[in-house]
Length: 341
Ligand code: PEP
Ligand code: MN
Image (cartoon, rainbow, N blue to C red):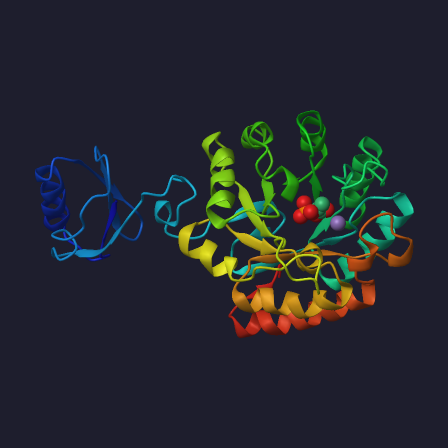
């Protein structure tokens, strides 16, 4: 359990709570923060009884930390983690970060055409898989290192930060050299050796929620990365498998406030994989921003009918421009703006 003191609690009040905890047979760990002091409790085998502490002077609330994720927990930090990618691009701050680009890098011309369009529309990060986790082994698997080289050119030419997926350990070594953000895909959310390696990477990680992962499982996956020392983790809701058959996946927007309640990690929403249908991407982008997401990840293709993967859920550049106009309006309603300014 964590005892959260009021911002104006006195040193004596903190001390009195510590004494009370010690009297109960546990160890108290006062942790001063910039706003208020939290007191951690260890030495307990089961849950600590809050009654008796809760009503003490200076105590704001008692938060149970029976949660197995300790570092991802909201209580550890007063404010949301801001993943700073440089040049004003941040995820988790007051600004909304938009990642846009094709499902897969298919070639230089394709990547450049889409990058130019999404840059003009206001995206600050470019997505595109060089390694694709495909359901069928006969589907396009990605251009691999050639794709990464194209992404590096996109960064230089268009000033966009690069988000691209690593599907295995060997791929992560390579992706780490080229990407600004390393994506761990839904199918790998519980690939624990890959998560541990991501935790030792020198780049931020975009962790997508598994197709049937609960919120606890998502945060435990993040904990694997955090526990290895990489504190720059961005979560991504990308839809889960349900009985609904009007969409590819069910975009679980209610996970956004649920994550924000439990964790200090930023969370973005991917309405492209989250719905699997082009016409649902704009409405659910609006909804994602309204619900409080820190950003969006959207698949854009200039010729979706020719796309080598996920064409049916990719929006065209003119739709992306429209999406951004609408997202800017919604962002203003919730007191945010699309970044960087
Ligand atoms: C992707 O973003 O390209 C992707 C494969 O997504 P997911 O892992 O969410 O299916
Ligand atoms: Mn895709």
